[in-house]
Length: 330
Image 1 (cartoon, rainbow, N blue to C red):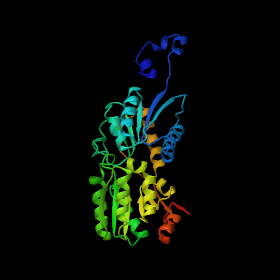
Image 2 (cartoon, helix red, strand yellow; image 1 turned 60 degrees about the horizontal axis):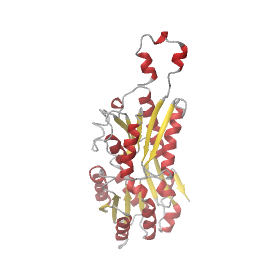
Image 3 (cartoon, rainbow, N blue to C red; image 1 turned 90 degrees about the horizontal axis):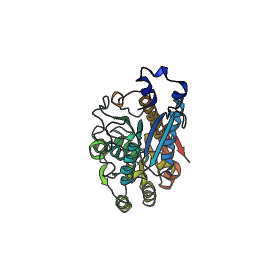
Image 4 (cartoon, one colour; image 1 turned 180 degrees about the vertical axis):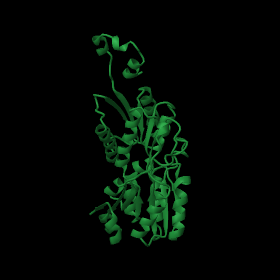
C-alpha cells in the first residue's frame, strides 16, 4: 500500500505528530522495464532512452518520485521468463513490455500489475487484450504495424528493384507466430497484384537464413521482406551480409537495418512508439486503469534508403522515392 493511500484511509491521520508523519517513507512510483534485446543493442538503447526521456518530461524524476528497474533479455526466451518473474516480484506500479514474447512472459506472471506493451503486432490474436478499443484486462499499449504493412514494403521494394520476380518474407515462427494470420494475407495479395511469387520463409537459425537467401539468388529476380520480429532483429547482421553477398534487394521493418548496410526500410518510428508508451505509463501511474486505455496504432513512420547499398546492387533509386524518404544514407 502506498503512503498516500495509507494516510487517506485513516481519518485521524491529520492529528499525528509531525515527527511521526515524517518517518513514513515516500518511495514514489516504481516502473519495471523488460527490454527484449541486449543492453548493447543501439536500437534498444534508443528506444529505452525515448521512454525514460518522455517520463522525465511528464514530471517523473529518477530517485525523487520514480524508481526504474530495467532488465535486458538479449532476445533469449529463458531470460525473458526469468526477468518477467523477477520484475513482477518487485511489485512495480506498471511494467513496460517491449515485444510479443516479452509481453507473453509478463502476462504469464501477473494478471493484476498494469503492463504497457510497445512494438507488438497483433495483441488480440496473442490474447493480450479483448479488443483494441477495449483492452479489458491489465494490458494495453501500442502496436507497431498494421497488417497491410507487409504489402506496402513489397510495393516499395518492387519500385526500387523492378526486376523482382519472387520475394520471401522472412520470420521466426517462435518469436513471430502472428505472421501467418496477420501479415501473410496482405503480403500475398500485394504479390498477386504486382505479379510477384510470394515465398513464406520461416527460419530458426543463421544457417537457415543463409539457406533462404542463397536459394533466392539461384535465379535472377529474388527479393526479401522482413517483418517486426525479435529473432530477425537480433540476427540482422547475418541477414544484411547474406543479402549483400548474394545481391538480393531487401526491405526491412526498422531503420537500424539500413544504417547497418541494408537497402531500405519502412515502418513505425520506434523511438516515437516508446515515447508514446511513456504517456501510457504516466496515465497509469496517475490512477487510470489499463483496461480503460485503448490500444493505439503508430502515427509516425520512417522511410530510409541506403544509396551506397543500392549502388552496390546496381539499382537506381527513382527520384520520387528519394524525395519522399525521411533519410537518405549516402
